[in-house]
Amino acid sequence: MAENRVLEETYDVAVVGAGHAGCEAALASARLGLETIMFTVSVDSIALMPCNPNIGGSSKGHLVREVDALGGEMGKNIDKTFIQSKMLNRSKGPAVHSLRAQADKQEYTREMRRTLENTEHLTIRQAEVSQIMVEDGKLTGLKTVSGAVYRCRAAVLATGVYLRARCIFGNVTSDTGPNGLQAATHLTDSLRENGIVMYRFKTGTPARVDKRSIDFSKMEEQFGDERIVPFSFTTDPDSIQKEQVSCWLTYTNEETHRIIRDNLDRSPLFSGFIEGTGPRYCPSIEDKVVKFADKDRHQVFVEPEGLYTNEMYLGGMSSSLPEDVQYAMYRTVPGLEHVKIVRNAYAIEYDCIDARQLYPTLEFRRIEGLFSGGQFNGSSGYEEAAAQGLMAGINAARKVQGKEGIVLDRSQAYIGVLIDDLVTKESHEPYRMMTSRAEYRLLLRQDNADLRLSEIGHEIGLIDEERYQKVLRKKEEIASEIARLEKTVVGGTEQVQGFLKAHGSTLLKNGVSLAELLKRPELSYEALGEIDPDRPALSEEVCQQVQINLRYEGYIRRQENQVRQFKKLEGKKLDPDLDYQKIRGLRREAAQKLDQLKPVNIGQASRISGVSPADISVLLVYLEQMRGR
Figure 1 (spheres, one colour):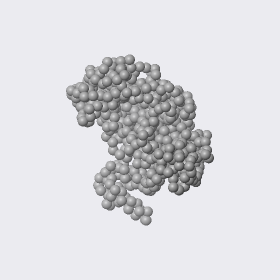
Figure 2 (cartoon, rainbow, N blue to C red; figure 1 turned 90 degrees about the horizontal axis):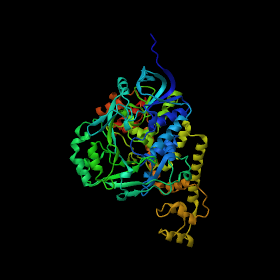
Figure 3 (cartoon, one colour; figure 1 turned 45 degrees about the vertical axis):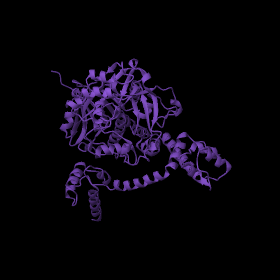
């Protein structure tokens, strides 16, 4: 009788999943020199965009810029594959400016796959991982459904929405992942057996429709920016100026809403058939109609899926209603009266974790060497996934190298806010990044991500010396130009007064510095060139930083003071073995929450739901007492 043998291989780091989190995790690990294997249920689904055909957007654009500044790939990839680009919120302050680009979905996937396949130390494997192998609280490897064993010293779980995935519209259910791809049905049991708490979340997507069946004359055309700004700080802006594809805007109406209300009894979302909790900030159209009953219309963005196809994405009309209702409601929307559906809208349920089981490094508290990133952590969105994947991949690699993990705090990056929120705060719905979540958003702008984070990326080993030196030169140029403007004084000459009058600005009575003039909202750095003959030739990026830093100087200084106070609390470390039940004066609820989450410092403790300012005062007194002993 033949001996029953199984394949067994050894790697430094294994990554489970090849979505946006998995790609960044695998690339980071491999680029740091670790032998890395990345598993996917389908090689054809690498970097798949199963929902919206864009990268970036409000606050999400910040994350992509930060991923790039740390040495990640998403920004570079969208710069190669976008078909329209726009800087959002230009009419508002720089803190909320966010870049957003429409992607050619197929090209985005193809280009990322090409990058992965040509990265040294990285192996791609099509296989379903069914089991994590743990000995004495440490990860030792992974097992696939075929029985093959992959020994590894660290692993990153980036399973996205594939764990026990179930797609639903009306009373039709299919046990698949997005786009009919195979679900991963075995790993959940293994995770539970190892004490990991699982949640059941839900997200959804709208129908894709045939472009030839749309009447665009009834819609508002949406153009890209005249001057395209790249996502990656390494992309030459001149190299990506190209003809762009339009998007379109239309609206639902009362008839749309009537059809939806009349069919709510057929909606699996309201019948209780869907178990998972959906994202509050990206609701389905039936959810919007019920929750915002006073609104007589909702926006519908009609966006191309790529240059290769006639499929159009109906942003804002995600649904799980039956297909006959989908046809009826879509055809009430101006321009969609004769629309033909290519792919039905559907909801998707999947297993994910309570991310409070993770350290801020994204390593599981219970299982040493096991890390986690992306929608599996209870978040939503491609950009949130990429950011977590990058940090999980970096820290998995550093674990193997025997180095301390990298944790970005809330004052350093949107990535820091994202991860801190996930591992600290209880969430019963998919987490979405928003600018309002960042306390120090004036400091954490998308335009200065390279200045904030490139040094960290260089120290990690993902930003090379040449790129880092360019960032240092940029910093020097900004500082030098700000100093020059502060020293350069102009008086009430005929030329200066004429310039001010032409720009609707108050005339001068005394001499002032050019820096002071730049703080006037009606004047810009570019305009001041008219009365500044000694201005040096500087890049557009440097000029932008000079203007922002001077114009918002007072606000920036105030936030920097707030950060100093924040850092004091973050610097007060808490013993991971501390028994909070024994600290006198702590309320019972606070002690229970603190014992459950074991915060790493006072700052994190203060952000735990159920821990009050009075509890934090008790902890601070306790730490002082311990220091005096």
